[in-house]
Image (tube, rainbow over all chains, first blue to last red; front, side):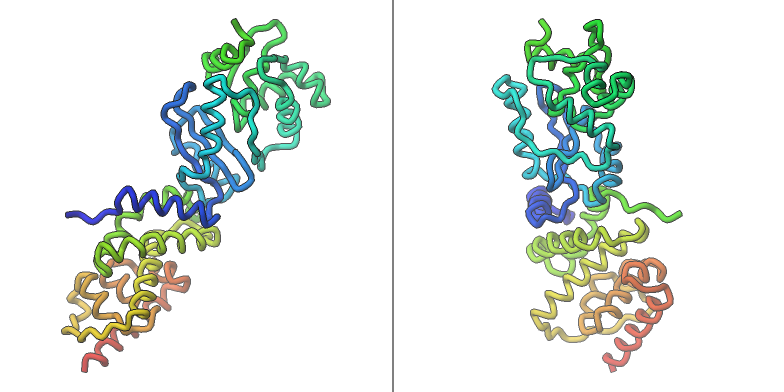
Length: 189
Length: 151
């Protein structure tokens, strides 16, 4: 018999690593959400990543660069996020009660995302209106970039930002996902 | 340019099987289970201090080897010294690990990594946090000591 660590041993180490507070980022891949597979990351300060691209290869390097190299898949730290996401996607939750960790983002991005967080469930706003609220009414295009690079979509609701003429315009996770979310919230019929 | 330290997930997935086999060969399957977790927790603690991503295999095996040493020290083994294999004989690391139980930790690690795992002195130096020539010295001091003890 070839000696390899059992799955149980593997999971035990991953849990112990998180429990000992030794991780910069705990991540996991949710394979089966209503939005398709999601890769999520959590630090000791809060949620730092939700990605519609579930391939860790691309994401782990970036997380390591921003938050530190101790990036490890571990289930326990992301359980709370999983629960809130499920509730939201099943229409049992309208607001998220989660801390976020947005270290590494430029100030402008943070300012815009803070305003975005104020846009409520089922409402929509426009890129221009959000730019104005962040203190620069002419920065609609820059706001589009901020939305496109939103590290925690769904929780920070960039799907609620649409074009001035009411068109959906764009979404980092693909337009069909934006549509699903807006329909879910009843903002789109 | 130095190789960047990879995300810990990548490091762990690359080396967990070899580390487990090394531990199982020294401690048996059951003993290896506790030592496995201990090895990678220790690696996690030290990971942010790594300056580059080279020699990570040697580094992981060195930590595992230290954990085994710590366990043996607690257990105080009184194993008989088997026949010493010559330097060119390249014994398997299982035998080597038994043989070198009584060596000082640094010499033991150098001997085991050199003759059991066939690592280069540059890799061993990096793994032990010292230099290539220090690793070479530690390995040859270890071999000398083994010869002396054998007599």
